Image (cartoon, rainbow, N blue to C red; front, side, top):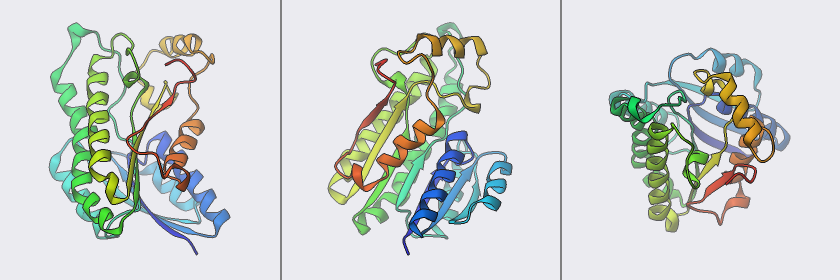
Length: 250
Protein backbone atom coordinates (compact mmCIF):
# COMPACT_ATOMS: atom_id res chain seq x y z
CA UNK A 1 0.00 0.00 0.00
CA UNK A 2 1.28 3.42 -0.96
CA UNK A 3 1.57 5.92 1.89
CA UNK A 4 2.27 9.63 1.46
CA UNK A 5 2.65 12.59 3.81
CA UNK A 6 1.64 16.16 3.07
CA UNK A 7 1.91 19.52 4.78
CA UNK A 8 -0.62 21.97 3.34
CA UNK A 9 -0.45 25.57 4.48
CA UNK A 10 -3.80 27.24 3.83
CA UNK A 11 -5.61 23.91 3.54
CA UNK A 12 -9.01 25.45 4.33
CA UNK A 13 -8.91 27.63 1.20
CA UNK A 14 -11.03 26.71 -1.83
CA UNK A 15 -7.96 25.40 -3.63
CA UNK A 16 -6.81 23.52 -0.53
CA UNK A 17 -10.18 21.80 -0.11
CA UNK A 18 -10.36 20.94 -3.83
CA UNK A 19 -6.83 19.54 -3.75
CA UNK A 20 -7.67 17.36 -0.74
CA UNK A 21 -10.76 15.95 -2.45
CA UNK A 22 -8.67 15.20 -5.53
CA UNK A 23 -5.96 13.58 -3.41
CA UNK A 24 -8.51 11.41 -1.60
CA UNK A 25 -9.91 10.22 -4.92
CA UNK A 26 -6.43 9.39 -6.22
CA UNK A 27 -5.45 7.55 -3.05
CA UNK A 28 -8.63 5.49 -3.21
CA UNK A 29 -7.90 4.48 -6.80
CA UNK A 30 -4.32 3.53 -5.95
CA UNK A 31 -5.25 1.75 -2.74
CA UNK A 32 -3.08 4.09 -0.72
CA UNK A 33 -3.31 6.34 2.31
CA UNK A 34 -2.10 9.87 2.93
CA UNK A 35 -1.33 11.65 6.18
CA UNK A 36 -2.19 15.32 5.67
CA UNK A 37 -1.11 18.01 8.10
CA UNK A 38 -3.72 20.61 7.23
CA UNK A 39 -3.16 24.17 8.37
CA UNK A 40 -6.00 26.65 8.76
CA UNK A 41 -6.04 30.21 10.11
CA UNK A 42 -9.49 30.86 11.55
CA UNK A 43 -12.35 28.46 10.90
CA UNK A 44 -11.91 24.71 10.86
CA UNK A 45 -15.50 24.05 9.79
CA UNK A 46 -14.74 23.17 6.15
CA UNK A 47 -11.91 20.84 7.10
CA UNK A 48 -14.03 19.13 9.76
CA UNK A 49 -16.75 18.46 7.18
CA UNK A 50 -14.16 17.12 4.75
CA UNK A 51 -12.68 14.95 7.49
CA UNK A 52 -15.99 13.07 7.68
CA UNK A 53 -16.16 12.56 3.91
CA UNK A 54 -12.68 11.35 2.94
CA UNK A 55 -11.71 7.72 3.31
CA UNK A 56 -8.07 7.59 2.18
CA UNK A 57 -6.81 10.66 4.05
CA UNK A 58 -5.84 11.06 7.68
CA UNK A 59 -6.38 14.76 8.27
CA UNK A 60 -4.58 16.39 11.18
CA UNK A 61 -5.89 19.93 11.65
CA UNK A 62 -3.37 22.56 12.75
CA UNK A 63 -4.49 26.10 13.56
CA UNK A 64 -2.12 29.06 13.28
CA UNK A 65 -2.20 32.75 12.48
CA UNK A 66 0.77 32.90 10.11
CA UNK A 67 1.22 36.61 10.73
CA UNK A 68 2.32 35.74 14.28
CA UNK A 69 5.82 34.26 14.48
CA UNK A 70 5.15 32.27 17.67
CA UNK A 71 2.15 30.58 16.10
CA UNK A 72 4.18 29.60 13.03
CA UNK A 73 6.80 28.02 15.28
CA UNK A 74 4.16 26.09 17.24
CA UNK A 75 2.57 24.91 14.00
CA UNK A 76 5.87 23.47 12.78
CA UNK A 77 6.60 21.75 16.08
CA UNK A 78 3.09 20.27 16.14
CA UNK A 79 3.47 19.09 12.54
CA UNK A 80 6.79 17.43 13.35
CA UNK A 81 5.11 15.50 16.16
CA UNK A 82 3.14 13.63 13.49
CA UNK A 83 5.94 13.04 10.98
CA UNK A 84 9.66 13.78 10.88
CA UNK A 85 9.30 15.51 7.51
CA UNK A 86 6.52 15.56 4.90
CA UNK A 87 7.16 14.24 1.42
CA UNK A 88 5.08 16.99 -0.13
CA UNK A 89 4.48 20.61 0.86
CA UNK A 90 1.80 22.82 -0.68
CA UNK A 91 2.00 26.49 0.27
CA UNK A 92 -1.27 28.36 -0.35
CA UNK A 93 -1.80 31.04 2.35
CA UNK A 94 -2.43 34.70 1.52
CA UNK A 95 -4.32 37.69 2.83
CA UNK A 96 -7.56 38.63 1.03
CA UNK A 97 -7.03 40.00 -2.49
CA UNK A 98 -7.72 43.74 -2.88
CA UNK A 99 -7.13 46.37 -5.53
CA UNK A 100 -5.23 49.26 -3.92
CA UNK A 101 -4.17 52.49 -5.62
CA UNK A 102 -0.67 53.76 -4.89
CA UNK A 103 -1.98 56.62 -2.73
CA UNK A 104 -3.58 53.97 -0.49
CA UNK A 105 -0.43 51.83 -0.33
CA UNK A 106 0.00 50.51 3.22
CA UNK A 107 3.35 49.11 4.30
CA UNK A 108 1.65 47.65 7.35
CA UNK A 109 -0.60 45.55 5.09
CA UNK A 110 2.42 44.51 3.00
CA UNK A 111 4.34 43.53 6.13
CA UNK A 112 1.39 41.47 7.38
CA UNK A 113 1.05 39.60 4.08
CA UNK A 114 4.82 39.10 3.91
CA UNK A 115 4.59 37.32 7.25
CA UNK A 116 1.66 35.18 6.07
CA UNK A 117 3.16 34.21 2.73
CA UNK A 118 6.92 34.74 2.66
CA UNK A 119 8.11 34.37 6.24
CA UNK A 120 5.95 31.31 6.88
CA UNK A 121 7.46 29.59 3.83
CA UNK A 122 10.98 30.58 4.89
CA UNK A 123 10.47 29.12 8.38
CA UNK A 124 8.85 25.99 6.97
CA UNK A 125 11.86 25.56 4.69
CA UNK A 126 14.34 26.07 7.52
CA UNK A 127 12.48 23.58 9.68
CA UNK A 128 11.70 20.78 7.22
CA UNK A 129 13.92 21.06 4.13
CA UNK A 130 17.11 19.75 5.82
CA UNK A 131 15.15 16.70 7.00
CA UNK A 132 13.65 16.19 3.55
CA UNK A 133 17.12 16.53 2.03
CA UNK A 134 18.42 13.75 4.26
CA UNK A 135 15.80 11.48 2.70
CA UNK A 136 16.95 12.65 -0.73
CA UNK A 137 13.52 13.56 -2.03
CA UNK A 138 10.58 15.91 -1.65
CA UNK A 139 8.33 18.14 -3.70
CA UNK A 140 7.11 21.64 -2.90
CA UNK A 141 4.59 23.82 -4.72
CA UNK A 142 4.10 27.51 -3.93
CA UNK A 143 1.03 29.49 -4.99
CA UNK A 144 2.30 32.57 -6.83
CA UNK A 145 0.34 34.77 -9.26
CA UNK A 146 0.12 35.87 -12.87
CA UNK A 147 1.28 39.30 -11.66
CA UNK A 148 4.81 37.81 -11.55
CA UNK A 149 4.66 37.16 -15.31
CA UNK A 150 5.38 40.30 -17.31
CA UNK A 151 3.78 43.65 -16.49
CA UNK A 152 1.36 43.39 -13.54
CA UNK A 153 -2.12 44.95 -13.67
CA UNK A 154 -2.78 48.39 -12.20
CA UNK A 155 -3.64 48.90 -8.54
CA UNK A 156 -1.92 45.73 -7.34
CA UNK A 157 1.33 47.18 -5.99
CA UNK A 158 0.95 45.70 -2.49
CA UNK A 159 -0.04 42.27 -3.81
CA UNK A 160 2.70 42.31 -6.47
CA UNK A 161 5.46 43.22 -4.00
CA UNK A 162 4.58 40.22 -1.81
CA UNK A 163 4.24 37.78 -4.70
CA UNK A 164 7.60 38.81 -6.19
CA UNK A 165 9.22 38.31 -2.79
CA UNK A 166 7.62 34.86 -2.63
CA UNK A 167 8.85 34.11 -6.16
CA UNK A 168 12.39 35.12 -5.19
CA UNK A 169 12.30 32.89 -2.12
CA UNK A 170 10.93 29.96 -4.11
CA UNK A 171 13.68 30.23 -6.72
CA UNK A 172 16.40 30.65 -4.08
CA UNK A 173 15.21 27.56 -2.22
CA UNK A 174 15.05 25.61 -5.48
CA UNK A 175 18.65 26.50 -6.28
CA UNK A 176 19.90 25.65 -2.81
CA UNK A 177 18.19 22.25 -2.58
CA UNK A 178 18.25 21.07 -6.20
CA UNK A 179 21.21 18.74 -5.67
CA UNK A 180 19.60 17.29 -2.56
CA UNK A 181 16.62 15.76 -4.32
CA UNK A 182 13.99 18.43 -3.70
CA UNK A 183 11.81 19.83 -6.49
CA UNK A 184 10.54 23.29 -5.56
CA UNK A 185 8.25 25.04 -8.03
CA UNK A 186 5.49 27.63 -8.19
CA UNK A 187 2.25 28.12 -10.05
CA UNK A 188 1.13 31.50 -11.40
CA UNK A 189 -2.54 31.47 -12.41
CA UNK A 190 -4.76 34.23 -13.65
CA UNK A 191 -7.69 35.20 -11.43
CA UNK A 192 -9.40 32.19 -9.85
CA UNK A 193 -12.97 32.70 -8.65
CA UNK A 194 -12.72 31.69 -5.00
CA UNK A 195 -13.49 33.16 -1.57
CA UNK A 196 -10.10 34.87 -1.90
CA UNK A 197 -11.89 37.47 -4.06
CA UNK A 198 -14.66 38.19 -1.56
CA UNK A 199 -13.57 41.82 -1.14
CA UNK A 200 -13.47 42.51 -4.90
CA UNK A 201 -16.29 44.20 -6.80
CA UNK A 202 -18.02 41.55 -8.93
CA UNK A 203 -17.85 43.89 -11.92
CA UNK A 204 -14.04 43.79 -11.79
CA UNK A 205 -14.09 39.99 -11.72
CA UNK A 206 -16.37 40.00 -14.77
CA UNK A 207 -14.14 42.50 -16.59
CA UNK A 208 -11.10 40.34 -15.91
CA UNK A 209 -12.97 37.37 -17.37
CA UNK A 210 -14.00 39.26 -20.50
CA UNK A 211 -10.51 40.63 -21.13
CA UNK A 212 -8.77 37.25 -20.86
CA UNK A 213 -7.67 35.38 -23.98
CA UNK A 214 -9.95 32.42 -23.24
CA UNK A 215 -12.84 34.61 -22.17
CA UNK A 216 -13.00 33.20 -18.64
CA UNK A 217 -11.17 33.04 -15.34
CA UNK A 218 -9.21 30.01 -14.15
CA UNK A 219 -11.23 27.13 -12.68
CA UNK A 220 -10.22 25.79 -9.28
CA UNK A 221 -9.95 22.33 -10.82
CA UNK A 222 -7.42 23.61 -13.37
CA UNK A 223 -5.25 25.06 -10.62
CA UNK A 224 -5.47 21.75 -8.72
CA UNK A 225 -4.48 19.81 -11.85
CA UNK A 226 -1.38 22.00 -12.27
CA UNK A 227 -0.44 21.50 -8.61
CA UNK A 228 -0.99 17.76 -8.90
CA UNK A 229 1.38 17.66 -11.87
CA UNK A 230 4.13 19.60 -10.08
CA UNK A 231 3.87 17.20 -7.13
CA UNK A 232 4.01 14.15 -9.40
CA UNK A 233 6.92 12.03 -10.59
CA UNK A 234 6.35 13.47 -14.06
CA UNK A 235 7.69 16.81 -12.82
CA UNK A 236 10.90 15.28 -11.51
CA UNK A 237 13.08 17.35 -13.84
CA UNK A 238 11.32 20.62 -13.09
CA UNK A 239 12.87 22.87 -10.48
CA UNK A 240 12.52 26.58 -9.74
CA UNK A 241 9.78 26.81 -12.38
CA UNK A 242 7.09 29.49 -12.22
CA UNK A 243 4.36 27.61 -14.09
CA UNK A 244 2.30 29.88 -16.37
CA UNK A 245 -1.43 29.27 -15.98
CA UNK A 246 -2.81 32.31 -17.79
CA UNK A 247 -4.45 30.80 -20.86
CA UNK A 248 -2.07 32.67 -23.15
CA UNK A 249 -2.55 36.13 -21.60
CA UNK A 250 1.14 36.35 -20.63
